[in-house]
Image 1 (cartoon, rainbow, N blue to C red):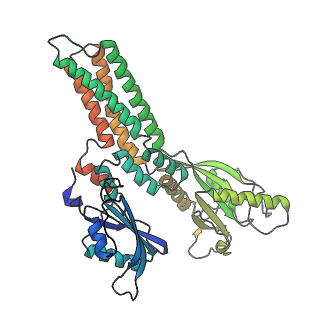
Image 2: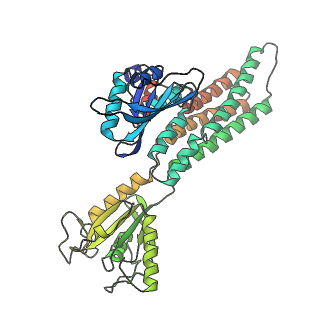
Image 3: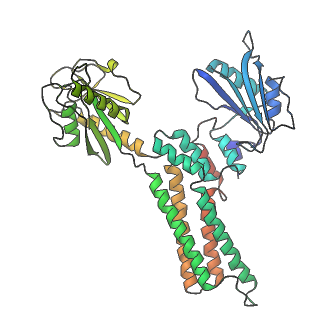
Length: 444
């Protein structure tokens, strides 16, 4: 059920950069499709398809237009169907220079390939039966994961953490449906392939499994990680005052004496509709005091575990260049009521409340975005189908209790199976595939 207007011929040779664009040691350009070997040979004459080998590696130079010398590369060819897409697949490895990559892709397009659409490689893997729909969605979850717990959830789903129990439940229901329909075929002979007690037991077990899967999907869709905001900066920069203003109470000691905060403090704050974890740290500065040195070490450790750092700068003092971190940083000009802030900084004052009406919504928005698991769309779809499946199984259980006609019971089991089939992709529509795979980046 491929949307041919969007996806064109699924046997076309498609090409795309599979690694992030930009300078680096290696870029990978990926091809897949029925004519992959011919396309590869079109730019690499030294490559010959060996039908006896499932994998081939060629190290050579490619001559590209405008280059005075050959471009060193390594081509890996894998014959289908034992590949990610189920088709012939090739990867060309070269130095990650975007002008060179663009020249190579242009040559591959001239050799007969076409540009891959978003998610087309993974969609072909799904259509070839290499992945079910929950696993295909997990690929996107792995790509988009920005926290360890999100990555763990996506990898578990990719490894079959959701697919395996779904397929097991589906097999159980298909076997039950087969027994019910076999009894219908021999109704005149009064032959039953499954008794009433066994019928109720099997439906009850299926209902329990579906309910458990529904609960697991609910738990995985929401991140358990509370957005962690660390206030950092030099001593007496207004960190503790801002901390108290955001928390809404005097949780931290405030003093004009620098170095009052000797440890980091944590407090939960509710801003708009989200819960945040705020951390006030000791000011960073050179010191010979052993206790203060340890406090600053703890502060740096807290900063490394932050999701966002609010770097507090007092007045016009610009210490931002002195603070390096891999964590996203928002620089604040604190104590804006006492000194003119540096241009371009968000001016805030815990005393007057200036800037807090801007800072609070910004923190809430970042927390909302951060708290959404990349697997949420997939798990939301699964919850919808599981809810419907559970409802059909409840009706089937009621019919079995009342010893209703077997035709009605078979209908409810069949409808429950349809819902499970929609989850794993045994039943799907063009629109569903487009909505799922259009969210992918090109090359995946």
